[in-house]
Image 1 (cartoon, helix red, strand yellow):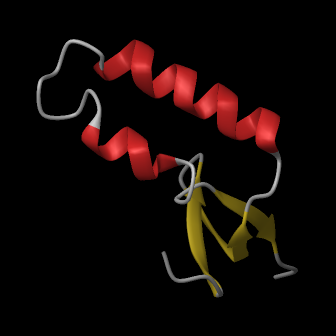
Image 2: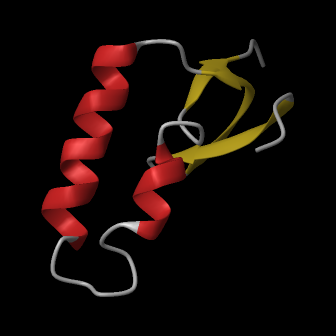
Length: 65
């Protein structure tokens, strides 16, 4: 994942944002649990992508308009 600046769409509004690597281990644990719950029965997504998912979690910080 490339980090830097970009835009996100929230509730139909596009907002400028800054992206960086998330360092909250508890948030990463919750994301892993949610991924497993959603994709555990899918043979293509059950384990492969989950191995790298912890490295794909980003912190998103809105920037002033």
